[in-house]
Amino acid sequence: MKEKIKSLSQEKFIHYILIIIATCIASIPLINLRIYGTDDGYVHILRLIGTDKIFQEGIFPPLICSSFCRGFGYAINLFYPPIVTYGPLLFKIFCTHFYDCLKIYAFFTILISGFTMYNFIYETTKKRQIAIIVAVIYIFIPYRLETIYNRFAIGEFSAYMFLPVLFQGLYNLLHGDGKKHYYIAIAGIGLMLSHTITTEYSAIFALIYVLLNLSKVLNKEKIKKIGINLLFILLICAFFLVPMFEHNLAGGYTIFSSEMMGSTPEDVQAGTIRFIQLFADIEENGVSFKLGIPLIVLSLLGIFTYRKMKRDYKGEYLSFLFIAVVSLIMTTYLFPWEYMPSVLTVLQYSWRLLTFFEFALAILAGLNLYTFIEIISKDKENIKNVACIASVIVIIITMAKIDYSYHYEDAKSLSDADYEESVLSQETLSHFSINRDYLPINASNLQSTYLADREDKVYVLKRRCYYFK
Image (cartoon, rainbow, N blue to C red; front, side, top):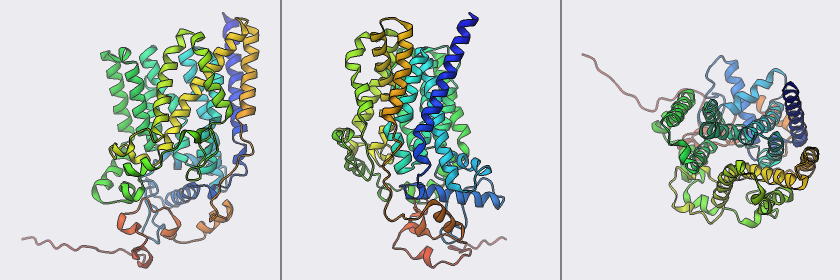
């Protein structure tokens, strides 16, 4: 028994080393990545600088940076979840530059997501060999690399850490001993404080997963635990959600305007992708959706391996196959976005749902490959062990994008160091230097001269007189 436990511990240790190696290889492009040149990178550099300024002024929580937008102030942490600001700022203890903090943070999101996926798959299959295969595939899934190296959409790629935790909590509650049901709350809090759009759709796909396992959830105790987790998520996240909703009710902000944000049902319908874009490098808005040959081959392998797959895995396989199909259809013109309520179209671009498609696809591909290995090994454990490790190495070699093709915006020609220095050298920052999504609608209008002409002082917009007898 002791030898068996020791063997399992050694296997887990080796697998964790493989996850670290895979993460390091997937992160190589971070070394030369120019964050300022990506789609959203400059905004997150500004958010770190602004948050740091607020902290230096002794203000907490750091919601509004008063020096941004010509002294009008900018709500850098009021509408955008705070983990993606507070998290990178932790590394300022060791780093001189804010852009380096973002790079280190990006590295850890990849690493942590590898560990969380590994733990999730081991929970569901009780096979570490499947877990390491899926974890490595998950580290290299193409759309995640696109969100980092092309878009630097920090909220989206942060969410990859918490998706496996969410489904591990659900699986443990529905199929396991229920002792890890609190993972649902951990994941919900992490998602809510990382990216609100991903949180919304995570809730939808989690609901789909529950409905697919409805016979397992029709239990008073399980329903109670789900309710407790949801309540806990709302209570912990109240410090972020309450001020955001208060500002939504109190005034008109650009972020809440579907027309100004390009998130009307018609906008989302117009921005859907074609299936061919999953196979050919045909970009949309400068974003590539190509899956790559390794992921396509591993996915198609299921046509031949499903019948031979162990019954223990088939239930989860079918659940994630359904999630993969639904999320894929939702990225294309086949889904009727133009008839959807605006609460669902806040995602702006339907291709953001590739996060869930490729999350599910990583699980399917890993199960396909492991089943194929079992078939060719013919119950010989040594052959299976060697084949699994060899497969992981092949996945790393074929899916790694060490020479990633960056798609920098032509107008953003400064280096990260020069851009950061230019921001730090300014006493106030022009509203033209930021994305303006978190400004009041009237102030964010490019035709308005209000922010350009205003002086840095308090303006009284309405005077009320009260008489007391």
